[in-house]
Image 1: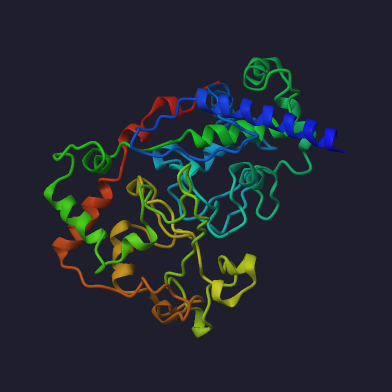
Image 2: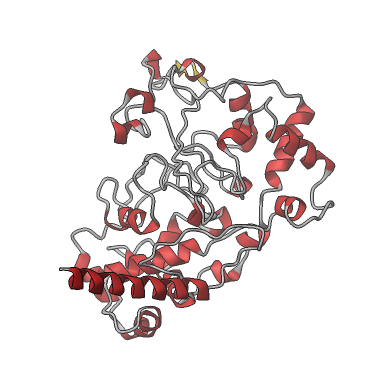
Length: 372
């Protein structure tokens, strides 16, 4: 028994050492002042996986009816998000949530808007591929047909380079997509140049005033959108605390029922706890100017309106099916308490948020469609 245990541990040690070497070989596009993301031991990063994943990400062959790719709902020009309130799947089915941006998604502790159990991209990617409620790529029921498309000669070299001597499978497709998405790092905004690269001229005087407002206790923004990735939901090689925060911002309080619309109650749908109704993950604010509309359901059109919403301490809907005063939602976060801004304050805050836009990321051809 002891011999078997030693053999198993030796095999695991060799596998871990191999994965560690492969991970170190990949050169992250990350300045030295930032930590590197955590990567699963069984799917280390490599240039070859990223290259394959990039092809697959933009490939309509991945949807059962060849009408959509991952990029259909995650457009580079929108910070790998989408400029419509909620997504539409390959069958034309309208989804209930806004497509999240993939900016620095490798640093996210949790994935999707409201699920505290989805903590790896390899898990999350299965949802748009095989999910049936709602249908996105719609592979379920067409598994062999879709997979056979990638067993064609044009893909063979890419798969062999990324996964030598392994038969093409959905697991390899998922691992490649996860690797590509992890490579989408954005850390070169004017704010980064000012705060981390020492360029005092990178931000205007207005943006600096807005930055001071953002990090003030008066506005409380940084409590939910803190850290270098401007979200509490952050994990990396130096982050040892398992934090999975979700927040009720007072967006709804339907008919005084202390809740959100039944079509989407947020984390409460997973936990089945009333206190989790209306709690969603705070997204990163990096490249936030490029990803309107906002909130989990795309129900606020502009950043200016988002600021007005938080300044009011929530949203009061006076008529319609979602009527109710979100400001009075008993589960609303303690940090959404409202504040007063002058017109100049608001302009300064908007200028600071604009300084989080990394144009080199939005326009980087290395992230774009390879037109394979």
